[in-house]
Length: 324
Image 1 (cartoon, rainbow, N blue to C red):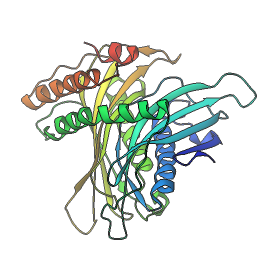
Image 2 (cartoon, rainbow, N blue to C red):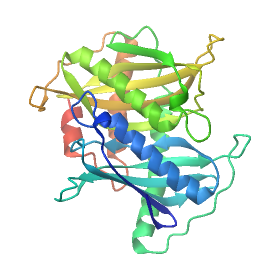
Image 3 (tube, one colour):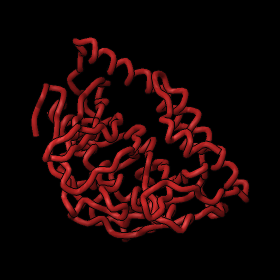
């Protein structure tokens, strides 16, 4: 690890064979785990206090990361609120024997500093001093309203047994190996679970291997505790030409109680791949129930909101995959 500046942290390591998942390369969930770790290091270093993941913005997965690649994850604080830190994170990799470095993905991560009682505490304010820092700060500020629109749109949806789309639920116990430095399950592990559930849902629907190309609006509502029962529900809500939009909810609760609380929610876009790894068309899903139709419209609404983000344009691959 290196500290390039007071507000920036870079993690460098080799992608290990154990990082390779169902896709044959490093899965999106593992990349998200790396993102969370680097952003956590930047947040704690800045706040000098324990920090929790609050939100992970849109992240697009392009070229695969392979076992043996030299990986670099750089997290830079670009804006601070009273207790929050907006952290721009970039993941890149290259062959350690040489060759060009490729930018694989980038996103905005928001961490909140908390005290011993778990309540938010103030953080030092970041003051941009260069043109590049000011531009990044302005970009973070411009996305606040868009993020609120996305969160409000997500919160307005209902997911009940009235839905008829493909759905899977994974259930297990949060184990001590999932713990972070504050004694809770860290956000990276939760995002890995989200990717796994989305993969199962998408693969069952299309009958082929599937990989994530996009995750958006990963919202963390409350901490997930070691020893709690975890329920990860993934449901298909929309299909495009090749993309399958999967809504994923993570809930948890004390095994001695029947109460399950929502901890995390996001929307992931998966694509089907043939034996050569090429993205291929998937069967179109037609909504049946009223709930199906509302969630189908919701997925389209999220695409439109993200497409309107200041200084942001949906990548061509996502527009084509998501388009009808």
